[in-house]
Length: 91
Image (cartoon, rainbow, N blue to C red; front, side, top):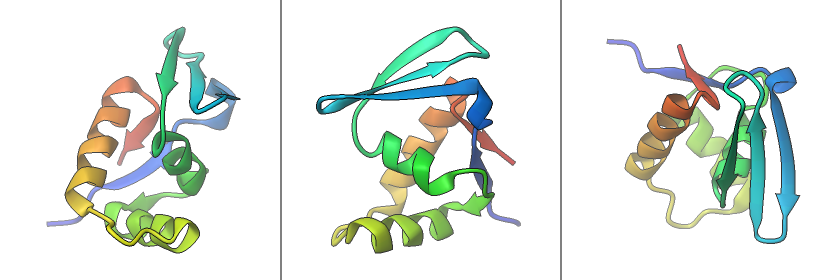
C-alpha cells in the first residue's frame, strides 16, 4: 500500500491574501473564497508545487515552524479537508 501524496492546487488558480490573523484564499476554479487560519497557509506554502507524502509534509512543517507537538492525524484530517475544498490535490 502506497502512501497518499499531496500537492497544492496550481498556483495560477489560487489568490492568497493575508488579512490580519486570517488568510483569504480565492480558488479561481470554483469561484469560492475560503477564509482560513493557521495552519492552512503554512501547509499550502510548504507544499508549493512539490508532491509530498503527509509524513514528508509534517517533517517540513516541523522544521520550518519548530512544531513541538506535531500531530500526524490532525495533519491527515486537514489535508482531507483541503482536498475536498480543491485547495490540495491527493495523488
